Structures are given as structure tokens and as C-alpha cells.
Image (cartoon, rainbow, N blue to C red; front, top):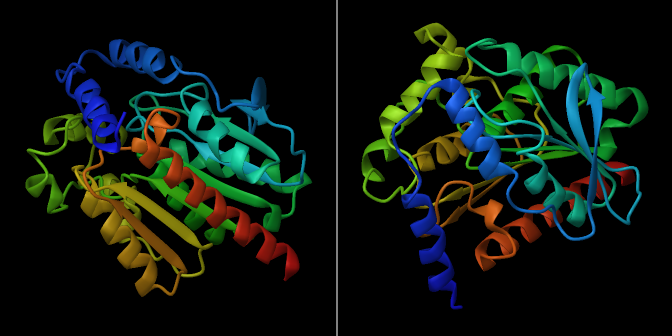
Amino acid sequence: MSRQQQRDAVRAALAAAPKERGTVEQERAGFELFGTARPLASGVIGDDVTLGGRRAVRLRGDDQSRTVVLYLHGGGYVVGSHRTGARLASALVARTGGTGYSLDYRLAPEHPYPGAVEDALAAYREVLVTTAASDIVVAGDSAGGGLTVALLVAAREAGLPQPAAAAVFSPWADLTLTGESLRTRAGADPLFDVPALRWYADHYAPTAAAARAASPIFADLSGLAPLLVQVGGDELLLDDAVRLAARAAADDVEVTLEVGPGLPHVYQINFGALDDADEALDRAGTFLSRRLHAAVAA
């Protein structure tokens, strides 16, 4: 199958997904089925543990180095779990070695902002008890991508050391929904429309003040760990990623932005079936591994 045929197949599958929102319970059940339908990366196994008082999937491959990957799943802060995040987390563990944790942080509307940030910070604190910050990397997709950056900010504010690096895939970084790509990519994004994003935002950050506070593009990012941002060129959240990278650069953070032309939201989840996904994860693994080694050497 050619690269374009692979992209077309992924796009067709996304376009076929129901667009009307159900109840929170229905959305969670559907996302759980979707997120757990495909296997973990080859050579990686998972088992259930607790981390920071929350459930997590622990992921381990053949390389039992000191590296720890803390992974934060997507799902608009309303759906998703440690199990739905495990697949992408396992792909990173396969590339960085060590141990990964896909965290089951609390969801909205039962636990609105800052519940997810509090849980991510508690998990990071626990990892720091047994692992040097220089051996830790953090990653996440979509809402989990925005949460990854929010965690780095929260860790800095709490006086905790930064991890060696972080990688985010299609980060949702602006819950106020002001990105220009919400308009310019409206006909290109096969997965989302603005009402869908609004549905998620209203559950997690129901006031204007909360939406702004939950949006990393409005935060002071100075002092954060090196950051890799990957985003698809066809998604509504393109500008979230671009503006997040620009804000990080303006705050003197080492940041790398990669835009995949013609690719959709969190295309990396299609590794094994989409060459673009495998290549992006290879680059993410290299980015994280280099910073881990650099941090250890320092």
C-alpha cells in the first residue's frame, strides 16, 4: 500500500466515526472500545498498577534501563483511560527503553479543571521518589498533550525538577478555542468540528476563567524541559500546536515543531499501518532518548 493509500485509509476510518455526541457514559464506552482495540507495540507488555493514587498501566520491554516514560492519554479530559493511552505509550517505551506508565487521571465533568493536573502532578511526584528527573520523560496526546505541558508548569511552580524532555502529539493547548485553524481546517479535519471541541471544553473548563487557566498557550513556559510538538497539517488543532511552540520559544524553551502535511489528529496512533506514524514515533523516540542521555551526562 502506498503512503497516500495509507493516509486515505486512515482518513476514511476517521470520517466514518459518528460525529454526534452521546452522553458522557456513551462517549466513554465508545472511546474505550476504540482505544483498546489494537495491540501494544511489539515486545512491550503491560500490567495494572497504581501511581500517585490513580490506576495506571505499567509498560515494559526488553530494555530495563532506568528510563521512565510518564504518559497522559487523550480524550478531551472527558473520555479515555490508562488503557486507551497504553498503545501510544508502549510505542514510546519500545523506542526509549525503560518503564512506561499510562495514567488514569480523573475526568470531567465529575472532576473539572484542575483535577487532571493534580493527578498528573501526584504521579510525577511518586516517580521522582525512585527515579532521578534526568531519567524521566513525559508525553501525551491531544488533551493529554496539553496536560503534559500543564504538568511541567505545575512541577516548576511546586519547586520540582523538570524531566529530561517532553513530547506532545496534537496537543489541545487552547480550551478557549481561538485558533485560526478552527476555521481554516474545518473542511479538512475528518474527526472534529468546533461543536465537538466545545462539548469537551465545557465539561472540563465550564467558565471562561477556567478555560484560559487550563490552556498552556497562555501560561508562562519559562524554565520548562525541552519540548517536541508533533501535529497533523489537516487538523483543527493545528494552530494550538503552532502557537504552543511559539510560546515556548518566546519563553526560551528548547522546542521542536513538526507539522505533518495532510495528516489528521494524533496520526501517530496508527503506527504499524501508517508509515508517517512510525516515522514520527521514531523521531520522537530519538528526541527523548538524546535528551535523556544529555541529562545523564550533565
